[in-house]
Length: 331
Image (tube, rainbow, N blue to C red; front, side, top):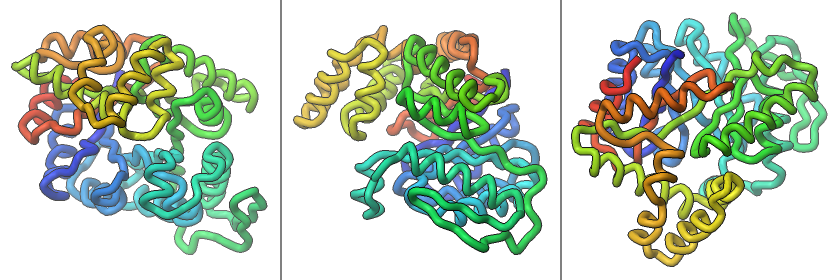
């Protein structure tokens, strides 16, 4: 299975550090470097820099929120990134959450499923090079057409999602699905949703690529690796809205999900982190010595229906720890 890398979500010293991480991943044989867009450097500028400094590794956004740019602009951006990367770009989209969208972008979160669907549909039409006419619930377009030649090939469009309906949407309308922070049982349930979505659209589910992002720490100090990943998981379940908590509850861990959330919200971060026991940690992420981490990564890659695994990193990982993990888990 091709292996991919999910460049750090946490702040890095500069764009150069992210480019160096992508260059190192290319040297080690990783298939693609994904970059999220959160509240630091924008993904487009960084990915353009990476495209100019690499030759073969694919690049992609995972994810660009559908509320922070118009669908037409997202289409133009995808076309441009496909051009500057010589056909190596893959577009990952998702709704993000109300904390990000409403508090940081000042936009009503609205109906995320409908907005994501309309964005995917409009972007596909923009990338076709034809004049775009679209009459939707959120977007009405008339007369838009790329001034440049449309990209060839059209960059695939992936959708991120954690809930049953959002994953079903990916199966119906997108070229792939991005999965993250799911237990093995939770992942299998969502794969059923993906197949149902593909069936509803009359598509072959095998043609919808599944990329599983795994938080990984492969270090000589296994205690440090596990504590770093444990803190990362607690932050997302406890501090990033309700989606991660709800996803964990759906997979049979409702009591733990609520405890982590409640403890984090009451600012007892140590107790929130401690609530994630070793078994749960190992069902959500990869952490330990390089040898142990490689074995655990392979066990996730062996799950039927997963096409790609992407190595991602805890929020507090140092540059040295990121480099060590990239090297230890290289294909």
